[in-house]
Length: 226
Image (cartoon, rainbow, N blue to C red):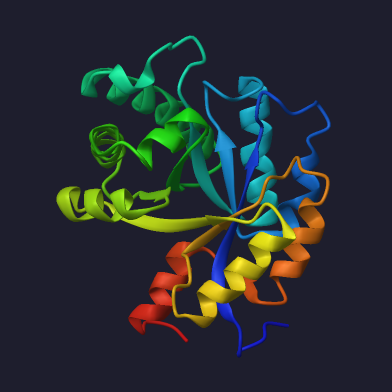
């Protein structure tokens, strides 16, 4: 039962990544989170892994997000042109959206991964290119990220964003608690599904906040539902 005294924040994990073994550990955590970032054509184990990940999310009634990445053979990603970044992102969004459509589902957000995540949160020019590509594909998508640059590009491109906090240790759980107490609650929390203590971190975090998707939280905040 949901504790009405707790704030509600999105909990997200990655699924179907290349680095994951066939027995995807993340599958055991789906019930504990509200959103799932499904690795697309660049980071996915295979098209079949993507298909099964979408099907699992449908069965568990979880919100779908696209986990987009840079190809590993790119030596200087910060030097990519806007057109190149656009092509890399649209290619991946098209792939995951096809599987979602086949299951009568919709992708709701985009979460960059790895070097793309780092650059988007530190390089404004790169971040603007990412935001423009995501918005070109679907203006309603939410872009997950962190830091001041994310807020700046949101103003300049009018893209929907969700500020993310990564919970990767017990210290991070305490930091999250301090953020919430100071009125700086993030929109979404990311947990590394492959870490040994992922389940423990999720359960500890649930003592502070309840998992609920970003879009649903936005609807509640708007006053449309209680």
